[in-house]
Each structure stands twice: as structure tokens, then as C-alpha cells.
Amino acid sequence: MAKVPTREECFEIMEEAKMPPHIIEHSAQVTKIAVFLAEALASSGVPVDTRLVEAGALLHDISKMESIDNGGNHAALGAELLKSRGYPALSPLVERHVDLGEWSEDAPVDEAEIINYADKRVRHDEIVSLGERFDDLIARYGKTDGARTRMERLREEMFRLEKKLFRHLPFAPSHINTL
Ligand SMILES: [Fe+2]
Image (cartoon, rainbow, N blue to C red):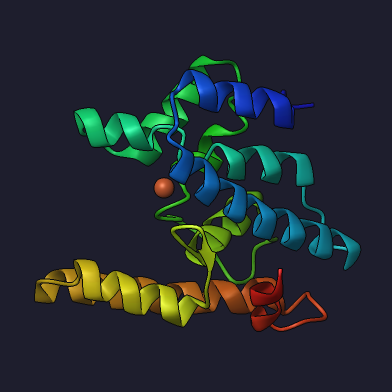
């Protein structure tokens, strides 16, 4: 079985990385949503590894500060860091949290999809809908036509991902706002 850090070990890794409180707060909210979805999916008979989802969600922004200070892609840096710490199973989850890369509506749900989606439901530390999150992203970063088009494409992709996840669940995406 893949080596996965416990919740306590995740917080130790965050401390060592000197993660600032607002990123810890953001990560805790993403984790709350991701674990809720993973447990609900598991109860609906979708095989997902909840421990892996929890650790991946807690650590998804582990290299955010490093990338703010020194540049680089924080998802790729985080994936590298976790691999070097002996947690290769977490690497693809962190690597794919911004941009999911290859995925399909028809393939089984995987843990990276849950974390990626949960991250899109949190603005700073506040739970929001996908629509609200993308309105904010487009207002902040959609300064050029190219950037806007890319974000609109991502928004459309995320609504497809939401559909994929919720077709297995007995509640609607808006239920997440009540967590
Ligand atoms: Fe991130």
C-alpha cells in the first residue's frame, strides 16, 4: 500500500515549509470539502482512497510560498517535494490540482479529480460555487483575451468535472456551501 502521511505528519510538513496561516486556512477548507466528497463517493460505492484525498488536499499548496518567493510552478514544485520526502502517491495529486491534465468523464473517479474540484470551490478560505469562483478568477486574471479564453475553457471543463463527480452523489453541488 502506498505510503501516505497522517494528518499530524501533514501539519508537520506544512510547518517545515513555513506555510503562512492564510494558506493553511485555505488548505483546511479544501480538505473539508475533498474529504466530505470522498466519503460520500465511497458510501455510494465509488472506490476512492479517503486517506490519500485528505493528505493530498492538506498538502496541495505545500510549495505555494516557495513559488511566490522564488518563482516556478507551485504544483510541480510541490509534487517534486513530496516525491523526495517518500510520498510518491501524493505527487500526481498535487501536480494536478491546478490543471487536471488528461481526464475523462467515462473513466473511474480518481483522487486528483476530487482535490482539483474541491480547490475550485474555495476562494481564499470561503466556500463558494464554481460560478462564483470563476467570476472572481476571470475578474482578477482575465486581463487579456487569451487569458480570458483559457479561463472560460477551464470553467467549462470544471462544470463537466462537477457533473462527473455529482452523478454518483445523492445531493447537489450547492450542498457543499452548507459544510
Ligand atoms: Fe494551489
